[in-house]
Amino acid sequence: MIARLLAKFRKERVLGVAKEKRRYDLPLANSSSNSFLRLLICLLSILGMLALSASFALSAMTERWSQGLANKVSVEIPASDSAGDIIAPRMVRSMTDDAAKILSEHPDVEQAAITEEKEVRTLLAPWLGEDLAMDSIPVPGLISVTFREGSTPNLKKLEAKIREAAPSARIDTHESWLADVLRFTGALQFAAILLGLIIGATTLVAVAAGVKSKLSENKEELELLHLMGASDSYIARQLQRHTLILSFQGGALGVLAGGLLLFVISLIAGEMGVNLIPDFRMADAQKLMLVLMPVPIAVLAMLTARVTVMNVLTRMP
Amino acid sequence: MIRFEHVGLRYGIGPEVLEDINFTLDPGSFHFLSGPSGAGKTSLMSLLYLGRMPTRGLVRMFGQNIGELTRDQLAAIRQRIGVVFQDFRLLGHMSAFDNVALPLRIQGRPEKEIRNNVGELLDWVGLGDHKHVLPNTMSGGQQQRVAIARAVITRPRLLLADEPTGNLDDDIGFRLMALFDQLNRMGTTVLIATHNTAIMEKFGHKRLILERGHLRIEDPQQPNKGGHGDLRERLQGVY
Image (cartoon, rainbow over all chains, first blue to last red; front, side, top):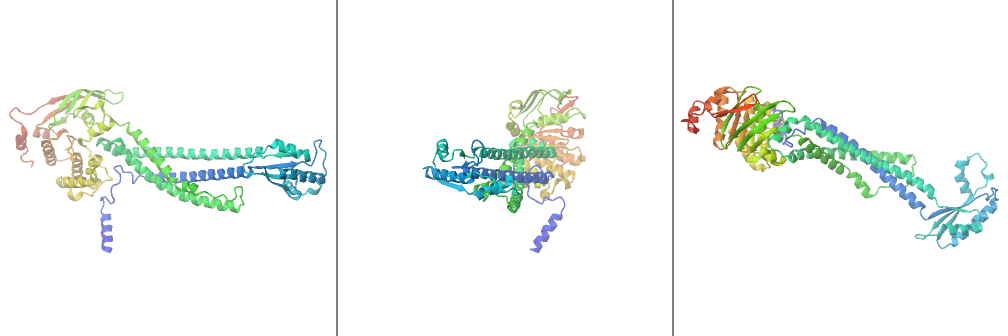
């Protein structure tokens, strides 16, 4: 064992002896730009992971909000009549009870729950201020209505029926609010996709520049291979393989670092009480997509290397 | 086998460095290419090893018009040509073995065949114990032998050598020429670019002489002299 180690040590001290198995015809393994490309792909992978995770989270948020508000409406019994006169709280409560009864008897309605006055006042407090004498302000009656699964109630008819008990009642389907939120999250998702495309484009440009730099660095060796009869594909394969390995290494490092970063972000978000998307957990397929991210990045880099090499080689006779 | 008809070459928009070149290299022939510096020898060599394409004229190699070939077909033609460059152009990151094996690997030959052939050839050129040595730690003579081994490992149909004796003393130069002559006798067409008149006179092969981009052909062979028997006489004292 010791003798073998000593023999290895002695062998490696002999100057000018090839120590490792030849991997490439071009001197690619010792190029100084390798670390740069690996690091760049690593950073781009982290960005890609963040963009993809953001896209997943936004998608989950949108779905949760849409599902949460599907089959639900709110019925409001205003605290003032159409002329603007205040209605007595007792009257408002009575009209609310009557409207709730009508709703409960409707075949499409699964549940009609009155929001208690105290709860309404709590909801209004942030807008009206804590210091205001809340008890002196008349509050509207609110009923949360849940329709049966698969039902398609005629809201106009239903509203007309409720107005028999509460003439100024109106149904709020949350549509305008939800549309704004969905538009906003849609824009964020678009931004995430755009970021992904920019990351992809940056990868293309960086790899192409790296490959061109390598070809220029090894111009004489490249020309020699060409003159020995190496086909364009033969030469391209060497750079493809080299780029694939480097990109995959960079991508794998990026996934590890990105995973750690996402974990830290989730901890911080948890501590800050961010519960816009409570119980958000990535699906296994989404986790797999994140873990496998180095694969498409490496393949993209490899194809870019091939196209770049072939393009450069066509300038040779 | 190799035929140039009215071939011209210019770089960019400059004047023609080769003008109306016409010659034929028959299979198994041996020629010297000579001429003063700047006459266009390197340019003509680059046309022969397909490092450049002519700007005019017809070049036929191994029965094919190179102007009509695809890139892959041109690569296949290049695989039939062995070149010994003046500056050797060995790959510094590879061992002597891998440098010599490179043309075979490009041709996709099996590793077993490569190991056998390259080992045998390195033994033949006297570098059997230098297989794993990197070129930049070898002497000029050793590097040259590696370059020659690399050029002949595929048994090329055409062997081109650019000033192969340029940096060598006469004795080694003659020995090298004897090696080329041996390859020629095995059927390889050989063209050597050289300034060395002593070698040209000693070996007496046909000469392609370039002067200011124009080519003329000289045949110093006497009618009653020729063939390898006479060559052996001329090489007495060299072996």
